[in-house]
Image (tube, rainbow, N blue to C red; front, side, top):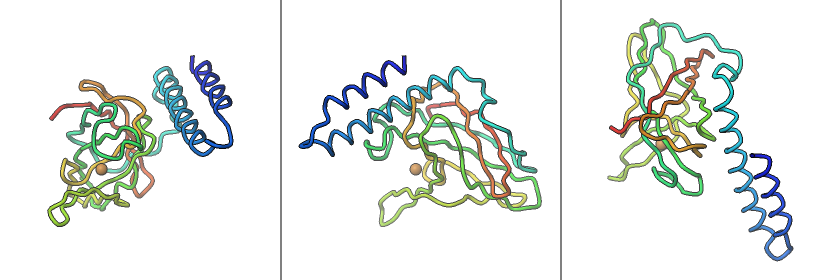
Length: 188
Ligand SMILES: [Cu+2]
């Protein structure tokens, strides 16, 4: 089915390509191709077993996740630029029982084209989000990712996150360790 869609889109790109509209058409074709790609990988992801993502890294020592959830995100909903596609956010609390400070440095998930660590700050009475390189989880302490503060931003969602859905995300720490979490989509 994905192949059929793709050839149809490629055919359409061929028909539409003409010198006058070349840049615009190329852009539209790129967007269309991205949709097909997201659609086909979404199908593949649904069919493949969860462990197909590759060799598992060692889990972080003494780190656990509490209270993880993601906001429902519909097509064209959420915050962000519509040209980026749908956006979503994951919130959680990281608990560090070890004597070493750990840093969350990245998150991976098949549901989004890109995943970033973000911080929401009030600047001159305006709420702004900005990417951060890492989030500290202090030794014998915790880091709370919550609305209005740190969060995990899902950019270019490949599917709608409906209330009651669950999806997989993998947290990556500064020591190379990884922790897979099962994220429920909840309305809070
Ligand atoms: Cu954000």
